[in-house]
Length: 151
Image 1 (cartoon, rainbow, N blue to C red):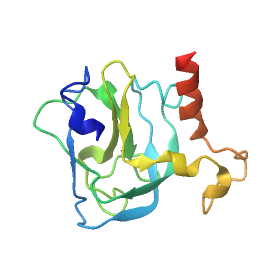
Image 2: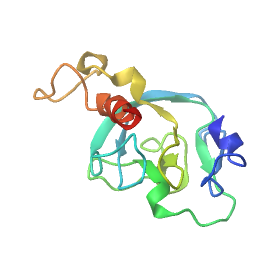
Image 3: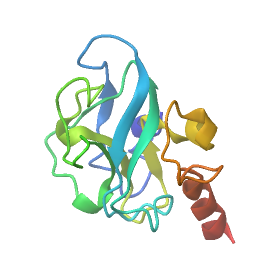
């Protein structure tokens, strides 16, 4: 929905439309994403993280309109276990270019994404998690960052 409102959200002119997944079906699974350096207030302090995240969507493929996307607006990318962006299925469940699955506006106050980190806030929500993870997963940080920004 936010992508459709890009005409009224400052700093989002290069945001894509989100269209049907390249697979033509609804995709629901854990996927691996990387948090690149961006201006997103939600991902503050998370750059470089490789994290599993719940993916559940039928229309998650980013279709750009030829405009160049500022690198600091890419907030999440589907990656392989080495952290390299993926465009191929199944590691990139929607088929977006460069594995892009999350974007922010120029100043980082608005972030859109197709994965669902809110579904994986606790370590027990994962089918597998590293033994050293505490009860809350690293995704809790996006909500803590938002709360800190509001203060």
